[in-house]
Image (cartoon, rainbow, N blue to C red; front, side, top):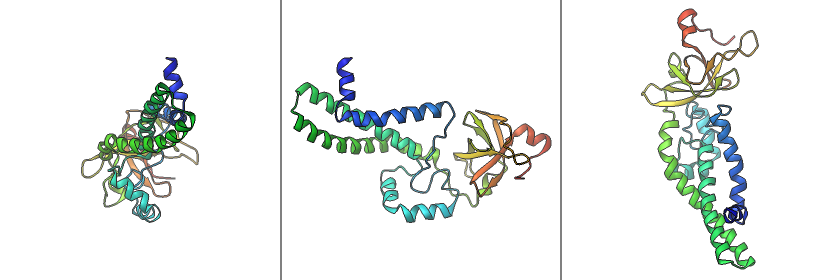
Length: 236
């Protein structure tokens, strides 16, 4: 056990160990429903927040062309940055951990360890990126949003809440686009009289998408029962 701890805290593995801490904390909050999986969106113009807005797509293509091309080359279009970054850190940490453990076993000189550690960091990051592309590539279809003729293509459809709750400032749900593909979309409940509505939608609840807020780039939802009983109101 002591040898494992020494390897985890040894150079160069410690670099990725430090990065792994916020990754673990982030996914803990995602599992608790406090944060969205696609908190940072995606690169390549096919994520749930970008694919619905052609203007946003153009901005991404123009401002981050090289990065977007690299992202596409790895087959990661549509995969949230948070997932890819987490996998890169995880696989990079594993590679660096093996290298650090080997350096401990062979008891290499400090200078060699330093130079070798710097090379290992680069190699581990590259290996992590390649491994992440293999693992995350199948997830692209899950998170990709097909190009609908308009944002209103989702309006009138039902969705399933995937976060702990949906409020006026937070929420995400799974919905089917016109082609039948299942995608994740940002959802909110409407504010009432200028105040945030009381959260009435919880994880796995079925909701009705009744409007789209172009300013916030989110869909407005309400419980299906409310919609059937009294109809849904738009933004105040």
